Length: 190
Image 1 (cartoon, rainbow, N blue to C red):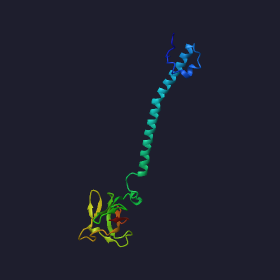
Image 2 (cartoon, rainbow, N blue to C red):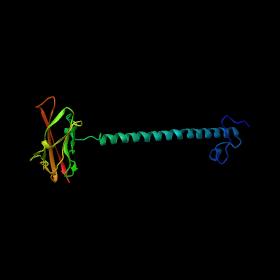
Image 3 (cartoon, helix red, strand yellow):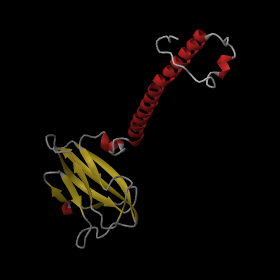
Image 4 (cartoon, helix red, strand yellow):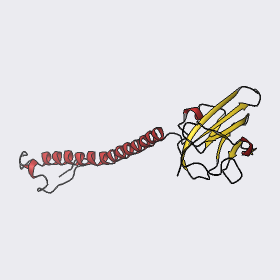
């Protein structure tokens, strides 16, 4: 008995559904059926790794998509304060707008290199209605262009008032004296 290329002899119990359709004396038909079944098994085995690769690729793409969405939702880690992020003169506020701080918290502004502070005032309310000028008591950090005030005994403000405080900074570009800008921000004290 000669077998066609790739044909296998299969136990009759495996081919029992097909054996009913094939004449019992037809060994050639039995070999043809076994070839088709063998090819179908090969076809399924070839697709399993591809299917696994496609599923893995889909998970990787979905994971990258989640990172992109998280980056868009989370932002860049910078402040969402438009008056700070859109103003090239201001690198940051200390403390940031809306922060909750302690009574001895340092208050100040971080300016870009080409700007300088004219006045810094702190008010014991959220609307900057009764400012106290602390400009003389600010500490200037040269390399960082930060102007900082820390409440202490002997300064106009010995401790920040409870609840809300408002700070206002007036600054100008060094190359354009007289053209000043200002920013105010409120923060709470615990």
